[in-house]
Amino acid sequence: MLDSSSLRSVLTLLSVASVVGCGLRSDPFAPDSLVSDDGNDSDDPGDPNGPGTCVDPLPIPFSPTTLRGELSGRGFSEGWCGSDGGAEDVYVLRPDQNADVTIAVDPGETEFTPTLRVIEDGCDPGDGFTKVCARDIIDQPYHFLARAGSVYSIMIDSRDGAEGKYAFTVDFGEPAEAQCGVHPEVIQQVPGSAFLWNNEFSQGQGHVDSYCGGPGRENMFRLRATYPGNAFARVETSGAFAPLISFRRGCGSISEIDCVTGPAGGIAELGFFIEQPGDYFLVVDQAEIGSGGYQLRVDFE
Image (cartoon, rainbow, N blue to C red; front, side, top):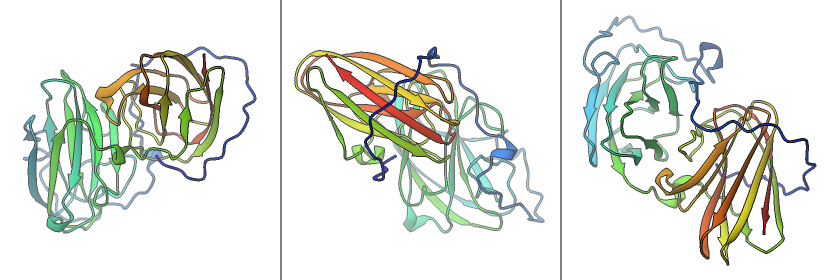
């Protein structure tokens, strides 16, 4: 996520820890990790097995569409970002092929402030892997990588006591670059040079997804290449920051060339080859949603 308070600094290199390959992930949701808990005091018992629940989710076609609904009463599911003690509608997406999926709420047709949650291969709290948990979906769209063979529970949730109609769109394809919050600092490819950067993040939802995960906050840098050549990126983190490095051609995950992850408070390293001049992107992301800092070094041959 764009953070203009980032300050460049020279890194003090520590001993290299072993890098954990991408793929093994666990859901960060846990009752004691909620950012906020708005409770649930509704007297309406609702139906935990009815349409629009984890038991009977509403289908989303694998094509651009607009969906509308209305919420009232109590809810049966909560996520780590809070503001979801009220009713929710659960939709399900089964993609035919890998795709970047963008979800945007229509403020003109939405009568409350919704929370968006997207869970891969699960629905109930603690089940599957939470890819998106965002309370500001009314203000900006969110996108995520949907993989063929996986199932995605997409939830429009509400605060306790909230009710009203809503509408949202589902689109497929490369998301607009603005959705990734590209950092203003540009990495310039210069033979024999090194790019250095550091930053600190609090716990929260990011805007860039990856084949290696990446729900947490991130910095996405434009990398301006002027010649074919090798490059090497190293990220060292502190606290609960589980590093993820992604090298890609665009904002969406489908444009990703390579990625790697490391343990929380550890190190991730990625070597990559730049095939031709042009603009690429290097993302320092998180495999989970923890808070902590990172130090980035990119070396060019």
